[in-house]
Length: 402
Image (cartoon, rainbow, N blue to C red; front, top):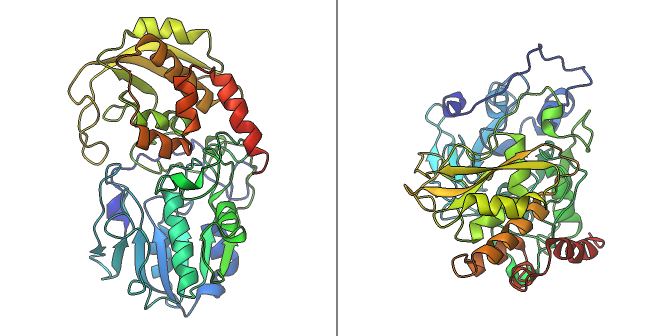
């Protein structure tokens, strides 16, 4: 049904045959559903919130597998940012469509609607959510989860969230809690930037703490992962890896993204329109060797090299990136020790150096930066030249409540 949508995906396979009982493999919530709980969705009209990442360990898409079962009827599909095939560029609006083979409607939750409407839900008895998240607050798949849970509560429809691992592990928490006056689609709830939870755990938090702000009760079931250890990164397992979106091709990029996405709120290129989004940064006015010398002594768990790049429009990946077709001079990041590397600290050190070296040229887009950071205080402290360590400590004190 959906296989033709996945051409762009680079899937990394283990060199060994996959064995489901091996300690080096986890079972996703989708696989646990199929093995143990399929009866709970039989003979019901089902809406599936999914995309290209909704694969089983045998590379079969969840929707294809469910559609082959005569006791299961899928009546609607819902897609987040990047579309059901993951082929739309970041920020590109996704239109409603219809699956050509089955005739099932595909409703976009990243277009004119970000929340399922009553009309979309009228032929649905239960909603299944199965999307691979990254683990950063500003990654919009969790915003889609938020609004799906809210709409389900308002329309008295049960939700089943099929759990998947946090790509950048479930053991690390970084960044300030979002301040409510900065709520947006890149920050829907009062959680840290790097929140250290799986998509299922996050669903429990949204509902249990009523972060979805509804007076209606939410009927939520989470089909939990099996054989997953929260301190492990996704690539420490032998499960196939599906890039969750066009600009997150691997785990190293996902880790860097949890800090360097803040660069989007400045006039510095975050590397969109290149082969190394979020791992390279630069601008035409930067002296990369000068910046490298200023940052190197502050770095832990990573290495930097001076780097030049020319951002280009890449269909399905980057549209009109910053400094398109201009030579950007900057740096390339390589993470060497995940335990000692703190993405947010690196980004704050980087911005501190840019403010110091280019006080007249470096600029914040205040609204965009504050929404990504979840607070005005980070930007204001950076402009006051407060050291990154002190900014991190200030945020860490607030995290105690989380």
